[in-house]
Amino acid sequence: MDKNIKRFIKLTINEELHELVINVNRTLLEVLREDLLLTGTKESCGQGACGSCTILLDGLPVRSCLLLAVEAEGRDITTIEGLSRGEKLHPVQDAFIEHHAIQCGFCSPGMIITTSALLKKNPKPTEDEIRRAISGNICRCTGYAKIVDAVKALADSGR
Amino acid sequence: MRMQPFIYLEPKSLKEALVMLDEQKEKLRVLSGGTETVALMKLHLIKPQYVMSLKKLSNLKGIQKNDNKIIIGSATTISEIIESPLLHSSFRAVIEAAREVAAPQIQNIGTIGGNILQDTRCLFYNQSELVRAGLEPCFKMKGRLCRAVKGAKRCFSVYQGDLAPALIAFKAKAKLEKKGGTRTILISDLFSGNGKQPISIEKDELLTKIIISLPEGRIGSSYQKLRMRGSIDYPLASVASVVKIDNIGRIVDVSVVVGAVGPSPKIVRETMSMKGKEPRSEDIDTIALAAYKVAEGVNNQPLSGLYRRKMIQVLTKRAINNSFKVIHGEQ
Image 1 (cartoon, helix red, strand yellow):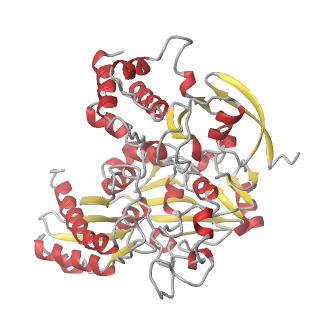
Image 2 (image 1 turned 90 degrees about the vertical axis):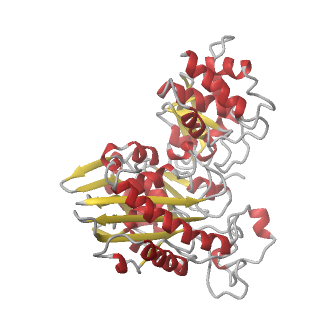
Image 3 (image 1 turned 180 degrees about the horizontal axis):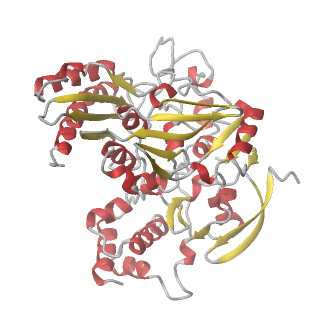
């Protein structure tokens, strides 16, 4: 095995260590969905424009479609699957349900993971800050109003 | 689309990285944040044999103050620039430009070095391999024609980096290192002005630092960007300006740089008329007209070339006026 083309890597995903042998030309998104069956993270444009593949890398939202899996080694990766605790949903997920912030649902994992990072850093964001934080996540159904409502409600309630 | 196979290199020191670059030269592609490189590799627009990651080179990361200079490591992320207290007070246009780069998720991983050294773009070039296969190769694809300008003798692709115009307006410099040599040049000299090969650094050189001198006196700056959406998009026209005035309000220096209207950022030279005077709107109009004249409006972006070029005039006025407002604490 040429270690420069195929590599043994260790990825910490949702606080769990995964050991994998992968081709180095694969993105983290491909590895998450195809090798680890963590299909909550979605692929849409594949070019970094839409935000549906957003994951957290050391707590910061990034596009997993533009990140080589080998580049994520040694970093803390959180996917949408890592937000809930078993049957107990993350407060952002609850808020999205309560405020009908989901229609087709394809952008929802990226939206939720992005807003969870925002609220962790800034528990009381203004509407402008919310809109800026999710400005890299495209939703074609909701018109964003319900999504902003959900995040605002969380900010106001301090959950 | 999937990326083609490549050999992944992971140097642990700058010295090791420079040796790798020296050995492989054009066969090697540097991977900093990867937000451009991976996107281009997925479209098969670039097919490097080697990809060299900068992730272990910690000395290329971070922002430091050294005497009257700010030194930014080339692998510093755009988000780190936005949040840097060292840059906030003096380099407003740089912060504004950084905030306008793509979207927050890209800012969290994309780097200043990658942003500056990004390739030019064109609607007829930045397409999937399938679309490109049905078209005769253009200059950018080593062909002999331009699909945007019929009969053109050169490539009209557009440089769409946000940071370079702002950094050039502040006369920032780039430190380039290679095995056995180092040179520091103006950021404006990183660009060839040729859309086919827009970046003019040597194949064995690595951009390691960006150096900006702290301005003295009363200074204001602004970055204005035209795009279709409030986020994600590359600039379709952009203007950075830096204005310096003396204690009695007379203009000492005005620097205006236009972006996304040509294969490189362009410095507007006709700013001398304002020097030594109080700010007057007719002088700002003159500079805006000069900016319009250096702008290249070609129909190879989501908005028409004519409109983008006209908007350069508008953005120039806004940028200069905003720079004055910053000086007077109105912004």
